[in-house]
Amino acid sequence: MQDSKRTAANRPDALPIYMQISELVIRDIAAGRLVDGQKLPPERDFARAHGTTVRTLRKALLELEKKGLLERRQGSGNYIRAQGAVDSVYSMFRLEHAQGGGGLPTADILSHDYLDKDARQPAYGLSAQGTRFRRLRYLDDAVIAVEEIWLDGGAGQVPRDLVQDSLYLTYRRALQLWITRAEDRVGIGPVPDWAPAAFALRPGTTTAYIERLSWAQGAEAVEFSRTWYDTEKALYVQRLI
Image 1 (cartoon, rainbow, N blue to C red):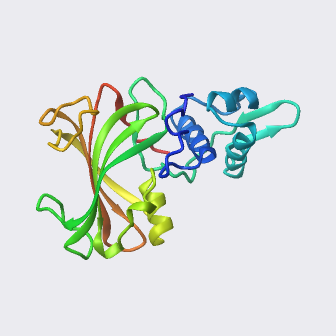
Image 2 (cartoon, helix red, strand yellow; image 1 turned 120 degrees about the vertical axis):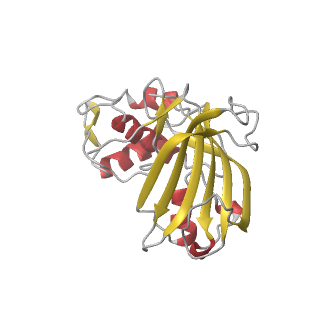
């Protein structure tokens, strides 16, 4: 499993550490790095690997147990119980480490603005405006992508201080908005001119590109996103269950 040192930092927009650990385990199960029946390391060692306490780790294990992904055997240890699709903060996040493994997604917000939608977007939502998030995306400590996400103005506005690593979790908490499905189109495109120096690919470089429309509870799509990712560090993965 990957170390979550970066996300364990006390960033105000980061998920709680116990959620980071449980989400990382879920993604590693999905990626096949953890398999049904596999025994996890002893709790003290597992907690040390994530730079946290045994108490915090046990909160993560309890979350996994509630989701049916963990069997805790008294005197023996903790065992993975892999199964079908599971509710996860990052259940729709499709980028994984190129060398294998899900990794824990995090992001740095580059900008947060309420603007008119630009002409390159497809028709979606009920408003001509939207909240635009530009972010630098990580898997564990590796910079893998830049992304631009637009939330339709008709769905509401999210204050900057409520934005977390997971925008879908942010929407739930700030707007009572649940993203239920998404449509992805994958191709190639030039890295945008706003990409920061921390992203290995320079602006204008052709790379793998994802466009996504996302729907919540209603019939109209509420979110549109563009993601440019570094194919040497990440792969787009879609699993059919």
